[in-house]
Amino acid sequence: MYGRRQVFAGPVVTLKVFKDNVLVREFLEKGQGRVLVVEGGLRCAILGGNLAQLALNNGWTGIVVNTCIRDVDKIDGCDIGVRALGSHPMKFNMKGMGEKHAPVAIAGTKVCDGEWL
Image (cartoon, rainbow, N blue to C red; front, side, top):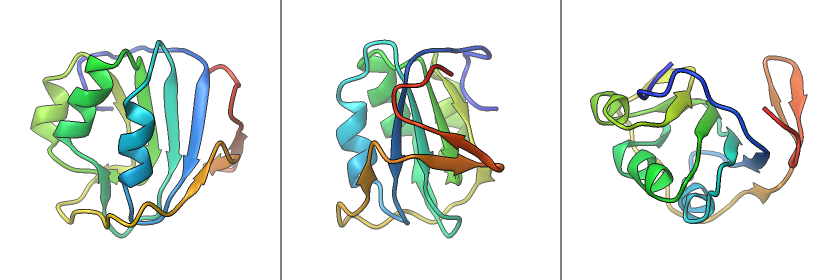
């Protein structure tokens, strides 16, 4: 659990990426009370402090990443809820590859775009 917001809820927007956060940034530019759920692979962090601040500035209530984050101290200072598997210092790639609005699996649970979390 990261960020200052311990509890959050909203309509889900899903994204599948692998070691790439270009689409994560693109999605975070428009939030309006939603929750971003990302399946991202475990070899690097796909969310850092700057993206958490972008999410906060654009009205996201929370972010769930089935991977790692970085800049934990900066994220913990943001009034947003973030759930992640852990932290990792390695940055992501920037290729823009991924699947928008695709169902994602987190701990054996299928999460679909438009559901409520």
